[in-house]
Image (cartoon, rainbow, N blue to C red):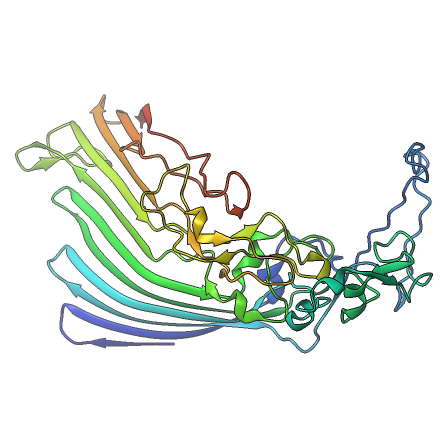
Length: 429
C-alpha cells in the first residue's frame, strides 16, 4: 500500500510500506536436487588399496542403509525444524521529488527493509559449547568408544576409541548434524538515494544517482559456501550456538554507490542536431557522445586462519584475533591488509575478529562511446562507433587473499580487464 500527497505543482512526496512473504527453499537452496536432504552417501572401499573396490561394469555391491531411526549412525545427517514457518520481508520508503525545469527533476528518497527468518543451512548442532571448549587439551585425548560395534566400521567415529570431545557432543553417535533450511537469519537495510535526471531536450539527456546505505545481517555468509547433498564440515559460522557472532555488515553491503550516464547529440547546424532515430532537419550526418561512470565501495570480506584448531569439536571455522587497525598507511597489491593487525587464535578459543572485518578494493569505471552517423539514402544509414571501456585504464582489482597465516595473505594477484577500445560499423535500414 502507498500514500501520495501533492504539495505544489512541482513537488511530490511519496511514502510506501510493503510486506512480502517468501519461501525459504527458494532463498537458501535454489539449485538443489528435489531429493535433498533425503540422500545418503554409500561408499565401498578397497580392502587392500591395491585391488579395486569393484569393477565398474559389474557395479558396486554396497547396499544403502534402510531408512530406519539408526540409518545415519556414524555419519553426518540433516534434520528439520518443523516449527519454523516461511520468512518475510518488510519494505518502506519515503521520497521527495522536485521538478526544477521542464526537463530537469531531482529526487531524494529514504528506503528501508527488514528480512526475517532468512535461511541459514550451514550450522552444526553437534558442536561443543564454548564453555566445554575451554576444558582444553583433555578434549583431544582418546577414550574407549562406548558405541564401538554399533557404528559402521567405515565411520570416522566407528573405531574402538574416540576423542573425549566426541562423547561430549549433543549427538555423540553422529559426526555433523545440520538443520536443513534453518531459517533463523535476519537482515536490516537502510539507505538514502539521490537522483538528478534530465529528460532528452536540446540534444542532451543524463541521469546522476547516488546511494549511501548500510546492510547488516547474520546470514549472508552461507551464500559463500557450497550447499552440498549432505552436512559439510567447513561452514562459515564461528559458533553454531551464538548467532550474535555472525551479525555484521552483509557480504553484499556497498555503503556508497554512484552512477552517472549521459547521451549528447552534437549540433550539426543552426538549430539542428543528430538523433539516433534518423535525420533531423535538412542535415543528413551527425555525431553522438555517450558515457557511463560508476564508482562504488569495496565489499566486506570474511577472514579465516590457515588452520581451524577447533574442527575436532564441531566448529566449522576459526577466525583470527583482531589486535590492531588492518588498514595500512599505504595500500598496495602486495599488502592490502596490515598482517600485524591480526594474530592466530589458539586452539580451544574463538577468534575475536568479526565475520567481515575488512573490505575489498573499491570499484571505479568510465566507459565512453562516439557514434558518427552517415546517411546513404533515405532508407539506409551507416554508423561508425568507437567505444572505449575502462577509459582511465584503472585496473579493477579483485579481492585479496583472506586466509591469515598463508604467505599470500593480503595480496591481490588478479584484476579485471584493462582499457579496451572497440571499433564497429553498423548498417541501419
